[in-house]
Image 1 (spheres, rainbow, N blue to C red):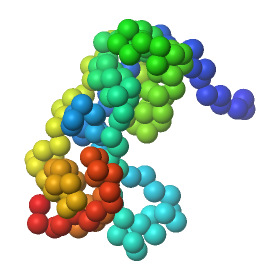
Image 2 (image 1 turned 180 degrees about the horizontal axis):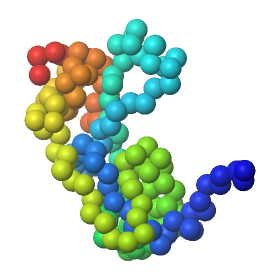
Image 3 (image 1 turned 180 degrees about the vertical axis):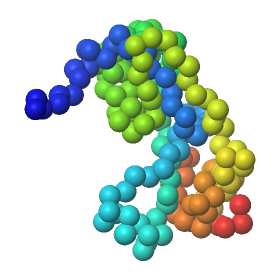
Image 4 (image 1 turned 30 degrees about the horizontal axis):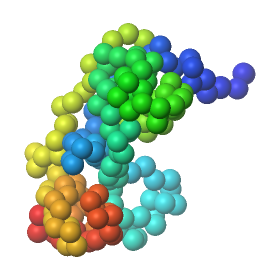
Length: 172
């Protein structure tokens, strides 16, 4: 049996990228993604004992946010790279490989899918709403509103604004 090889980044550029069905929103010009934490067997035990969060909140930087918003299924990775270079200039060079590597990382985590033709991004979970199980919590340090999954109420979180570790109150 031949060993499986990872695709070269250049081979991904003609593919179309579309956001997967993931809760997300844009706060203060940054995309915030929320997805279930994937633990190994030992990590799962430690997380259960330490009452660790069940969901991961990732706040993307300017380049990541722009890439995320462009991954709507109507553009190839090359077109996304070209658009990023037009918007952000030389700071994204080399645009093609950087875009492909970033989107490949999101694909490995199940946040983006690749298609050979145009596709539709699943934005049905855009906006972290109460109906989706997200509760508003105020950061005790900077008072910014953070939306945490109801399963993570009472657990620690990192505020996306002040970057301080805080504990969410169960009040919601």
